[in-house]
Image (cartoon, rainbow, N blue to C red; front, top):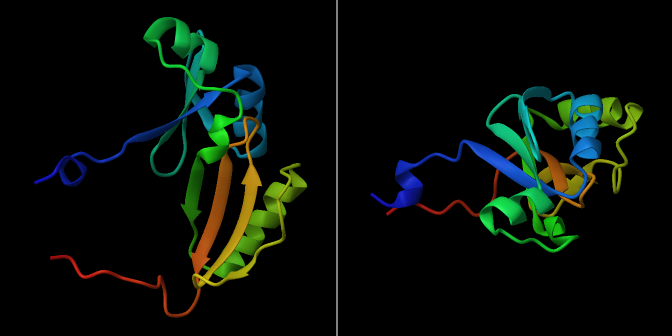
Length: 142
């Protein structure tokens, strides 16, 4: 078996500029619970996999991993919800907490009801629910 079939993704780490601002966003706006906090690093518990934050300057100094400011905009974290109605409820709740959405939730050409917002470092979040008929383009496994 291949690497991807044997090893599950357990966490997603966002490389951030201001870890304190990011911790506030993820705890106060989205409701993640802080699990670990160390210099330049934090991770959270939530439904599903672990979300981690690592300050760009810290990972650059200690692991020689260098990321240009703004490059987190190429990251999209997707959250599947049970229905379009549930997505609308979540949208309204997050909006009331101060999360700035790009557009109101709506149906898209890929047969999903979606809403999008950005985190403090430009990372994009997608909330989505499949519309009737589910995900298009299923490929049969060989």
